[in-house]
Image (cartoon, rainbow, N blue to C red; front, side, top):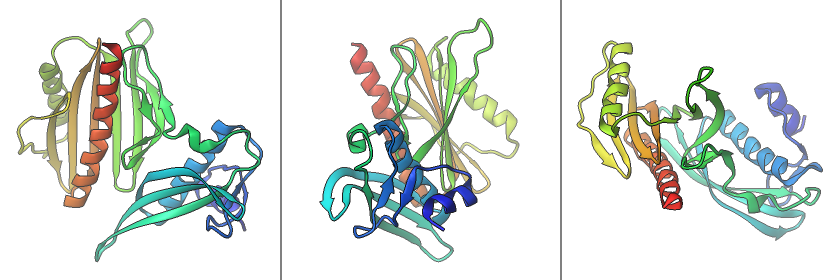
Length: 257
């Protein structure tokens, strides 16, 4: 059974890979398709592998190469939590994309969401988390309101983009009140902190830590809720993830000026 059949059977994901194991001598072979579909196939393949191994991962290099039949290389950093230790590794994955109409590596970083003018452009890979889906929360006749969801091993995030109505601090207080009311037993031992354009409040509920942040981007609020299994290493990884979102918001603001 090849990797395509394995991933289809165990995760229900269809990928356009006909052969290979991802090594330099046996790269994953992509079927004939357009460059966008090829890049998504590569990303979905890496994600399926990450799910199977129970690890967090992020791309640190996506570049052309010339090693045997491999012509693209994706290098990733991985983190896996076990009962005994935290395993970290850098892994190289090789691809044969010669049947593809274009060079997938040129699309990196992949974009998963573009909203109205003045809102940030969001990447498929938000730090150590990866895009799941978009939810449209606006009812008929209401202003723009969407949620972009991400997840990874032991962590999830939701980025909310909606029309601004009021001040950032008041919006954070409103969102924090909702969380406190919906989660009996949750505690908020830390004060509000500034992380770039975001005002951020953190909460603890059992083994989970939630980071709630609100930023103003033109005439919109950008709110983020990051929830993960609390651990010093996970705090480091999710802070990195938050900072990727910070850069997206700052870029949108700079472009608007």
